[in-house]
Image (cartoon, rainbow, N blue to C red; front, side):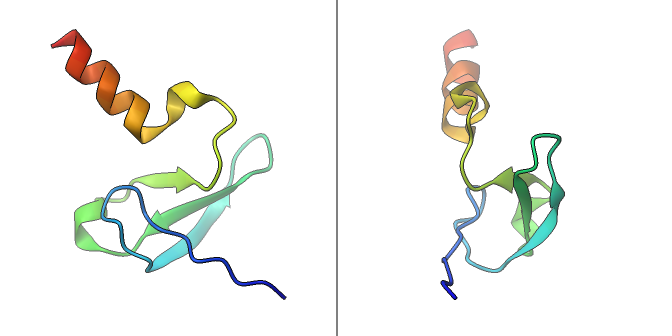
Length: 63
């Protein structure tokens, strides 16, 4: 059994729980920290446009 340390991209914390699956069957996670505000994330995105870093960059470029 292999245990992977999963970090939340919002708070960078390691206290996360499983939060269902996507339509593609990928595991969805959610951070337990209060700063996460209920935002879910996936360990490995297949669509790079959905990465939090890419979303942040798009928002900065539009402003």
